[in-house]
Image (cartoon, rainbow over all chains, first blue to last red; front, side):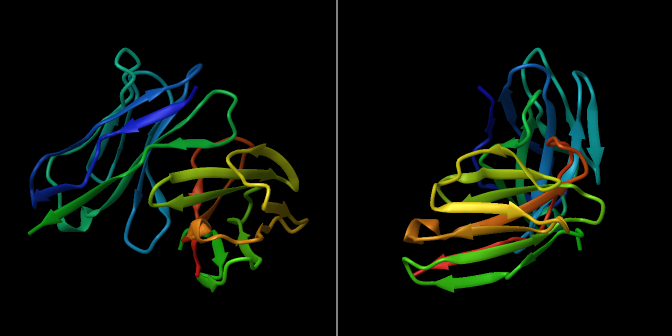
Amino acid sequence: GNSVTQMEGPVTLSEEAFLTINCTYTATGYPSLFWYVQYPGEGLQLLLKATKADDKGSNKGFEATYRKETTSFHLEKGSVQVSDSAVYFCALSATGANNLFFGTGTRLTVIP
Amino acid sequence: DSGVTQTPKHLITATGQRVTLRCSPRSGDLSVYWYQQSLDQGLQFLIQYYNGEERAKGNILERFSAQQFPDLHSELNLSSLELGDSALYFCASSVEDRAYGYTFGSGTRLTVV
C-alpha cells in the first residue's frame, strides 16, 4: 500500500540552527512527493514538491531530494528562523490515486 | 488567502446533531477534496469530487456524505454526530482530477459536545 512515515516531533531548535525532518515512504508505481507546512490556525500550504527520482524541490530556503533508492524525501534548511515555527507534513501522490497520503506531521519550534 | 473558502470557521454542536460544512474551490479548480484532521488520526482523506462527480472515497463514515454542485462548491454533511467527530475539516481544490499540488482552505473546526 501507500504510506508515509515521518520523523516524530516535536522538534525544538535555536534560531540559525540546521534543520532536518526525516520522511520515508512506501508506494506503488512512481509517486510524486510533497512537503506541506501548517502555520497556527491556518490550512496546509504547499512548501515544495518533486515528481521523479533525484529531483530536488526547494522553496524559502527549504530543500528536499527525492531518493528512490532509500525511498526518502527528507526536508532540510540550513538556518531556521523563528517564523519557520509550524507543523510540517510529508505527503505522497501515488500513481493512479486521487488523494494525497500524509505523514503524521512534525511540529517545529524555533526559539530566538 | 489561498483562494479556497471554507465556512463556517468554527462550529460547536451537540451529539446526535447534523451539520453542513461548505467549501468554495479556487477559481478554475474542478476537483474538491475533503480531509479530516484529528489529534489521534492525523490527516485522513474522506472524499473527492471532480466537476460534480464523486471520484474517490477514503475513510469516510456512512454518517458522512458530500456533494459538489454545478457551481463547483461542495458541502460535507455530518450526521448523528459523536464526540469523536470533533476535528478540523479541510477542503482542498485542484485543477486536475488527481492529487497534484492541492490548495487547501483554512478549515472548519468542529467541536461536538
